[in-house]
Image (cartoon, rainbow, N blue to C red; front, side, top):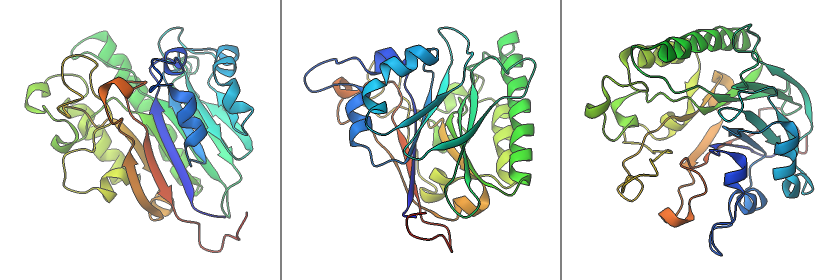
Length: 281
């Protein structure tokens, strides 16, 4: 096969993302038509299966396969995977508490010698010292257990999405002002450190070491986008074998505030072919 390109984007509501805002900003659909990505992970679709298929109908007639996590929390979550390759199987979060939240979806693709699992993930926002934060932490624990099992399977895998955690001071512009806030709490950052210590690789950070950003989320308010006062909370965490093949990573930041169709920007990584994989496989 040729190189594998994977993108992830929190669309902040699929129906809002496809809305044509101006002749210059036609929303998500033209981006999907132009992208070279093989796989695109979507978060916060805030739509059920039928609504999502309707919104993405032009893309689906252009060769994309679509799977989504249904059910989901209405108006809040919803994740999906678009793929240029057929999708062999899907799995939701195996959890009594979170299985119906629509925050995690795995898709198995027949890519590479042993196949590939791509997961779209949305970790909910929290609020320090509240029940909402405790729920976020329970979800993180459930996710961590699933990621351990996935890594142990030996299959190439990448978990893409909005993790709602900035890992280090280089991942948030105003880190001093957020030390006690959800998204930059010591316990959240330590949890990410443990995941990375267990073998998962933050491929964007590996390819952009020791620099601020590249940020992929900016508030709609004020001049956060213009001043690049953002957060890097959209990650692709890959198993070691796949991560070793990451050759480039970029944030597809809009050229101007008026051209944004989400408060996030796509995070895109290119992976080289697996050794021994035949062209066209």
